[in-house]
Image 1 (cartoon, each protein chain N blue to C red):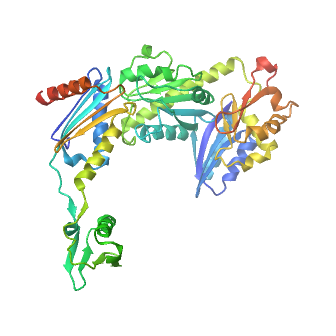
Image 2: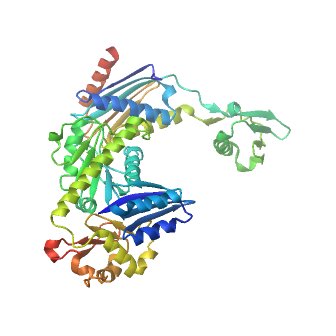
Length: 189
Length: 307
């Protein structure tokens, strides 16, 4: 069973290729752990022109990760003490804290403990923008998925959808319009 | 008639196998020691195979036929990017190796795309140094047919692999086409995927048999393993080559992994018991691979002798 709500792949005249690309796309999205964030996926491949298009709907965006989400912040006499719970974010957090308070104000007496000599709470500082990271990973996945020879690429990302087109030829406004038309056809089918 | 076989067993007493094979008049092609296990690629006279089988049993080893031993096969992908590697290409190369062939992976510089795919003179010449080539293509029939341009100029038999079924008539320049391989993004592990690898091996085997049959019409002056043995004996520097396989055998000669500039005179001067020098019965030329030396044994029609 597909983990996606709707997943359609069409390649007129190349039924085998369409079925195979279905597998490839799922394999790559699973490898990169992106499957759960994508709701619907439409893929249209025209090998005559040739071009490769993917249109996807995202499952809502994730809020950015703040210091308070990954660590316990406690007020102390000198300032604040931060006890890191999720160590994978430690490097990013340190970078953000250094930027905000300066290196001399941030100390790390223990592996998972930071002290900050300041009166301003770090709890609301953004550690990583998960959504931006997801979009970066998604673009990387799309480039991996598209046939390598299709080097002219266009990637339009909005709040909750993306449209990726790759082609060997120049991507013209007419081509983009044609792709939109095909995708609309698939959505309504 | 020499039979290509692979011996797998413990390191302990494996030199007995090597000694026996040499006594029988066979050849040791390659020796791989991996911790406590050793893999030997051997050419053994077919009528004496029983003796080796008995010794193998005694040593608790395993003896399997390696039909592709003594050949070099090129595995060619459109490029070395993540789209083509590692899955299919590595699986095919590894499977060729398991069947005894020396496989070399070649990624073309500009082999991608349908209209823009191209191959240059250097790449063609490099692939031509092998005994057979496997071209790995993708999942779209029209692209695979169009990409014929890549192997049109290659003289050795080319086995093409791809996804869809394509009638043989559509690809006149391919020796054989193996379908249902194509581009995949995972390792081959299902039974049908392993079956596809077996079909590729079978196709390569047929391609090599055709090459052998062609060579048989005008036999080589001497056999490549014999040249290998003589070079190993008379050019001691070969022991200092860092390659895992310092002399790789081809059907028509061998690739000696020593720099051509420094060693071609020494290799040419290698003398056989019959009193002839190697340079009298073979062409010694620089290889396209690194700075290696290529030996191409001349056929009987050019030298007038066979030994």
